[in-house]
Amino acid sequence: MTGVLLELEPALAALRERDLIPVDTVAVACVGSVARGWANAASDVDLNVFTSSPATVPGAVALTVRLRPDVVPTLAVRVQDRQCEVKWWTTGQVDQLLERVSWERFEAGGGSARFLSDTEELCLDRFVSCLPLVGTDWIAETRRRLEESAFRAFATVRSLAGVDTAVEDALGQLAAGDDESAVLSARRALGHGVDALLESHGVFGSAQPKWRARRFREAAPPELSFEDYWDLETMRHLDPGAPAAWVRRVVDLCRRLSTEVEIG
Amino acid sequence: MTELSSALTEGSVVRPEDGVRVRNFRGRLVVALVDQAVQLEDAGALIWRQLDGVRTVAQVGDAVATEYDVAPDEARADTVELLTELAGLGLVTRVASGTSAG
Image 1 (cartoon, each protein chain N blue to C red):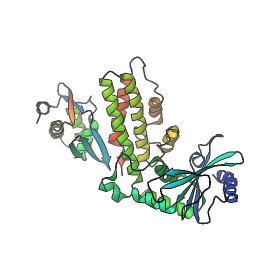
Image 2: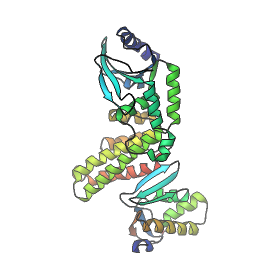
Image 3: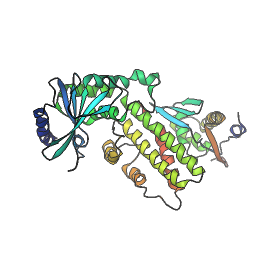
Image 4: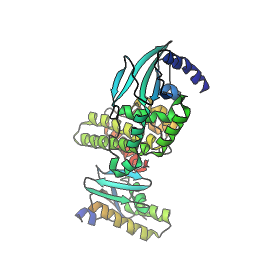
């Protein structure tokens, strides 16, 4: 881990040289695959900068969020031979996100399918696995607030809602004799079901299914072995001539997960 | 109570109805279908988890008897009663009936 931090020093220094670390910066964190130890030579370095007031970043693309301010500036910066993608969040925006995933909101019926946008959810879930570069104490405190929030419950309920819809689609399509569509719906159901399982264990990142196997190994959930998961993810036992059996196997698993995945 | 629900016996095989949604809130199961919803805890939650479309009602009841150290006859009767209620709400459906498990 120390080696990774040393590698990130040039990126941080380059951002400072280009006046991209505002004077009221509270924290800077490396997030994404580099922070999680999953990066390869082609991976970007993802950085989140947290400031007290909105940052003005020339040339940045503005991501829209349902917060105040309602944009998150994003900029791709080349540092030596690495592509860095930087986002500038305000600490106020983070406070608003944490309020949106409070237990008060969840228990008031806030456990709906769409509780945060992908951008907003990534901001929060990346606190769990980020590497602090600046503002270690603030990042640690934010992690603590996130752990105590209903974020895990919100994420799990959202994924379980996806399971329900996809299972209903798969069964309806099977009944109509549309086996090919049923297979695709079952694949969706499997993805949502595994994401719900991992989220219930505090391992997030469902917006990026490419890392699902990595997340699964990290979580090592007792409810499902990696071998059984990978069997289904790779569709090892699908008979293209008779796919209904595979669809039902996935549906049975999803139903079991819906019963076993614990919320809250 | 539907004709189906009144026919449930220890030899029946029951499974969740398609479209039923289940949530596990710290061990308490909430089972819902359209406008019907029930909360199942402890033995009720165990019974629900046993409904795999293969086990008979008697076998489910025996699992309850083992887990909660109660008389099998009592557990089986309670299981029939609960599943009859759930069938009446449309949350479970009978797969097949067979002879009573030993």
